[in-house]
Length: 164
Picture 1 (cartoon, rainbow, N blue to C red):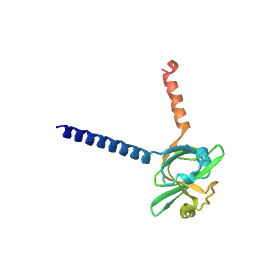
Picture 2: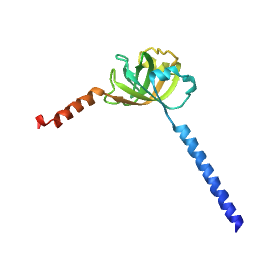
Picture 3: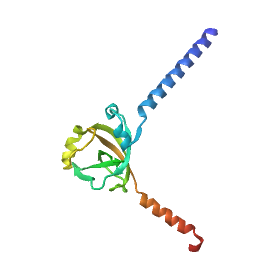
Picture 4: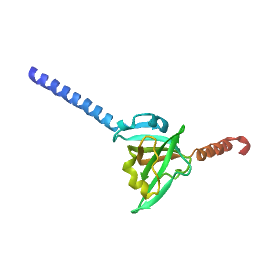
Protein backbone atom coordinates (compact mmCIF):
# COMPACT_ATOMS: atom_id res chain seq x y z
CA UNK A 1 0.00 0.00 0.00
CA UNK A 2 2.79 2.38 0.86
CA UNK A 3 4.52 1.76 -2.52
CA UNK A 4 1.37 2.70 -4.45
CA UNK A 5 1.04 5.93 -2.42
CA UNK A 6 4.65 6.84 -3.19
CA UNK A 7 4.08 6.03 -6.87
CA UNK A 8 0.97 8.25 -6.95
CA UNK A 9 2.85 11.12 -5.30
CA UNK A 10 5.75 10.73 -7.73
CA UNK A 11 3.35 10.68 -10.69
CA UNK A 12 1.52 13.77 -9.38
CA UNK A 13 4.80 15.62 -8.90
CA UNK A 14 5.95 14.67 -12.42
CA UNK A 15 2.67 15.91 -13.94
CA UNK A 16 2.94 19.19 -12.00
CA UNK A 17 6.55 19.76 -13.08
CA UNK A 18 5.67 18.98 -16.72
CA UNK A 19 2.66 21.30 -16.57
CA UNK A 20 4.67 24.19 -15.13
CA UNK A 21 7.44 23.63 -17.71
CA UNK A 22 4.89 23.58 -20.55
CA UNK A 23 3.22 26.77 -19.28
CA UNK A 24 6.56 28.58 -18.91
CA UNK A 25 7.70 27.52 -22.39
CA UNK A 26 4.45 28.50 -24.11
CA UNK A 27 4.29 31.83 -22.26
CA UNK A 28 7.82 32.72 -23.28
CA UNK A 29 7.36 31.86 -26.96
CA UNK A 30 4.01 33.55 -27.45
CA UNK A 31 4.76 36.88 -25.79
CA UNK A 32 4.91 39.90 -28.01
CA UNK A 33 7.11 42.90 -27.37
CA UNK A 34 5.42 46.29 -27.57
CA UNK A 35 7.59 49.28 -28.39
CA UNK A 36 7.21 52.81 -29.62
CA UNK A 37 9.26 53.59 -32.76
CA UNK A 38 11.88 55.59 -30.84
CA UNK A 39 12.31 52.81 -28.24
CA UNK A 40 12.66 50.19 -30.95
CA UNK A 41 15.32 52.13 -32.83
CA UNK A 42 17.26 52.68 -29.60
CA UNK A 43 17.38 48.90 -28.96
CA UNK A 44 19.55 46.23 -30.59
CA UNK A 45 17.13 45.06 -33.29
CA UNK A 46 19.44 42.27 -34.43
CA UNK A 47 18.56 40.41 -31.22
CA UNK A 48 14.83 40.43 -31.97
CA UNK A 49 15.16 37.73 -34.64
CA UNK A 50 11.86 36.19 -35.67
CA UNK A 51 9.94 37.20 -32.55
CA UNK A 52 6.60 38.95 -33.00
CA UNK A 53 6.38 42.53 -31.83
CA UNK A 54 4.03 45.49 -31.91
CA UNK A 55 5.47 48.79 -33.13
CA UNK A 56 3.53 51.94 -32.25
CA UNK A 57 3.92 55.29 -34.01
CA UNK A 58 2.35 57.81 -36.37
CA UNK A 59 2.26 57.54 -40.17
CA UNK A 60 4.51 60.11 -41.85
CA UNK A 61 2.35 62.11 -44.28
CA UNK A 62 2.92 61.22 -47.93
CA UNK A 63 4.69 57.91 -47.27
CA UNK A 64 1.78 55.50 -47.85
CA UNK A 65 2.19 53.60 -51.12
CA UNK A 66 -0.19 50.82 -52.15
CA UNK A 67 -0.43 48.56 -55.15
CA UNK A 68 -2.25 45.39 -56.14
CA UNK A 69 0.19 42.68 -57.17
CA UNK A 70 -1.05 39.18 -58.08
CA UNK A 71 -4.50 40.02 -56.69
CA UNK A 72 -3.05 41.00 -53.30
CA UNK A 73 -2.79 44.52 -51.90
CA UNK A 74 0.72 45.38 -50.75
CA UNK A 75 1.69 48.62 -49.04
CA UNK A 76 4.51 50.44 -47.38
CA UNK A 77 4.63 53.49 -45.13
CA UNK A 78 6.88 55.09 -42.55
CA UNK A 79 6.07 55.25 -38.83
CA UNK A 80 7.67 57.93 -36.65
CA UNK A 81 7.96 59.06 -33.04
CA UNK A 82 10.21 61.81 -31.66
CA UNK A 83 12.16 62.17 -34.90
CA UNK A 84 12.88 58.43 -35.25
CA UNK A 85 11.46 56.61 -38.29
CA UNK A 86 11.07 53.03 -39.49
CA UNK A 87 9.57 51.71 -42.71
CA UNK A 88 6.73 49.19 -42.50
CA UNK A 89 5.61 46.73 -45.20
CA UNK A 90 2.28 44.92 -45.08
CA UNK A 91 -0.04 42.85 -47.25
CA UNK A 92 -3.78 42.42 -47.25
CA UNK A 93 -6.53 44.49 -45.67
CA UNK A 94 -6.02 47.70 -43.75
CA UNK A 95 -8.18 49.48 -41.16
CA UNK A 96 -10.67 52.08 -42.40
CA UNK A 97 -8.96 54.72 -40.24
CA UNK A 98 -5.50 54.07 -41.73
CA UNK A 99 -4.29 57.29 -43.38
CA UNK A 100 -1.55 59.92 -43.24
CA UNK A 101 -0.69 61.02 -39.69
CA UNK A 102 -2.89 58.34 -38.10
CA UNK A 103 -1.73 56.57 -34.98
CA UNK A 104 -0.85 52.98 -35.92
CA UNK A 105 0.25 49.79 -34.20
CA UNK A 106 1.89 47.38 -36.66
CA UNK A 107 2.23 43.75 -35.53
CA UNK A 108 4.94 41.74 -37.23
CA UNK A 109 8.63 40.96 -37.25
CA UNK A 110 11.80 42.98 -37.69
CA UNK A 111 13.62 41.93 -40.87
CA UNK A 112 16.62 43.22 -42.76
CA UNK A 113 15.80 45.99 -45.21
CA UNK A 114 17.47 43.99 -47.98
CA UNK A 115 14.95 41.14 -47.55
CA UNK A 116 12.12 43.52 -48.53
CA UNK A 117 13.91 44.96 -51.59
CA UNK A 118 11.65 43.13 -54.07
CA UNK A 119 8.48 44.39 -52.40
CA UNK A 120 9.94 47.92 -52.26
CA UNK A 121 10.74 47.75 -55.96
CA UNK A 122 7.15 46.63 -56.69
CA UNK A 123 5.96 49.75 -54.87
CA UNK A 124 8.51 52.02 -56.62
CA UNK A 125 10.02 53.11 -53.31
CA UNK A 126 13.44 53.31 -51.72
CA UNK A 127 14.15 51.69 -48.38
CA UNK A 128 15.69 54.30 -46.15
CA UNK A 129 16.38 52.95 -42.70
CA UNK A 130 18.67 54.22 -39.98
CA UNK A 131 19.44 50.73 -38.73
CA UNK A 132 19.09 48.57 -41.85
CA UNK A 133 15.87 46.99 -40.59
CA UNK A 134 12.18 47.32 -41.45
CA UNK A 135 8.93 45.94 -40.05
CA UNK A 136 7.22 43.13 -41.97
CA UNK A 137 3.70 43.58 -40.59
CA UNK A 138 0.99 40.94 -40.58
CA UNK A 139 -1.61 43.16 -38.90
CA UNK A 140 -2.32 46.90 -38.71
CA UNK A 141 -4.43 48.71 -36.13
CA UNK A 142 -5.14 52.41 -36.60
CA UNK A 143 -6.76 55.03 -34.44
CA UNK A 144 -8.32 58.24 -35.69
CA UNK A 145 -8.53 60.59 -32.69
CA UNK A 146 -10.60 63.24 -34.47
CA UNK A 147 -13.34 60.68 -35.09
CA UNK A 148 -13.60 59.86 -31.39
CA UNK A 149 -13.19 63.46 -30.20
CA UNK A 150 -16.18 64.45 -32.35
CA UNK A 151 -18.24 61.66 -30.86
CA UNK A 152 -17.36 62.85 -27.35
CA UNK A 153 -18.39 66.43 -28.22
CA UNK A 154 -21.74 65.19 -29.56
CA UNK A 155 -22.26 63.11 -26.42
CA UNK A 156 -21.72 66.21 -24.25
CA UNK A 157 -24.29 68.13 -26.32
CA UNK A 158 -26.78 65.28 -25.93
CA UNK A 159 -26.33 65.37 -22.15
CA UNK A 160 -26.70 69.16 -21.91
CA UNK A 161 -30.19 70.05 -20.57
CA UNK A 162 -30.36 73.08 -22.90
CA UNK A 163 -30.59 70.70 -25.87
CA UNK A 164 -33.29 68.41 -24.48
